[in-house]
Length: 290
Image 1 (cartoon, rainbow, N blue to C red):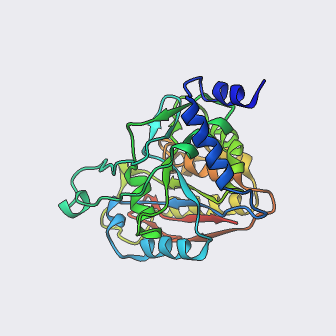
Image 2: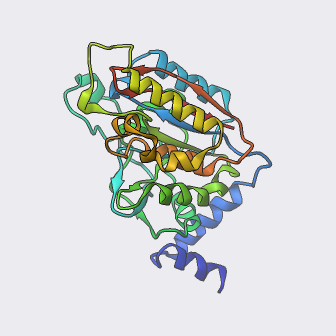
């Protein structure tokens, strides 16, 4: 099969010659690097972190300053939960205010980072585990822009999102992520955005800076398993006992972590920051890889 035919097949057949030219241009501009771009799983917490100067937003800003400037950012956000897998493919993604009950100042925020249709097509072509749709409707939800705007406040780096297929089990997401490794060699920063411990049903607003004992214990268990590369246990988190079930009553905020673990090389270093459990049942812990 010719390369153009392969790419057309991989992207579902809906590719014009102009689209192929964009994809070739993307590949030509980004030479494969000797080192892998670092990765990040971020505990994003409240949308208010998007406009507040606090310990969490400062931690995200510091991470952005410490790593090489990325060619683009690809975010797997807990808040884009779809049947099937999609990647944003518009040149100018909108800022989505997917929340309610917060101050007007938060709704007024616009994060006008560009998209990158060529990168979207490249991402879709890399994934063979699923047929990836090129999305022109979504944009950047608060799992993405509240974090990335602190890292790259000038909004001058392309930002894309990859959705989470809610019909698939955890191992599927871990294995799908492994197909994205080539993007790291081209300087793309891949971020998983959620929370390892996330149970809004039993949130306690009085515990501003404290977590329930079981939540703190589970956060430490997750960190230990990550450090030891015990990914199978993290994939099969439902086997980790009652604390895990309370920490992950629904999986959407946890699954972004599995994308980062799936992409991690065995000997890559991991580190933690923003390592705090608060309001009883929310872990803000962020994981940096590489």
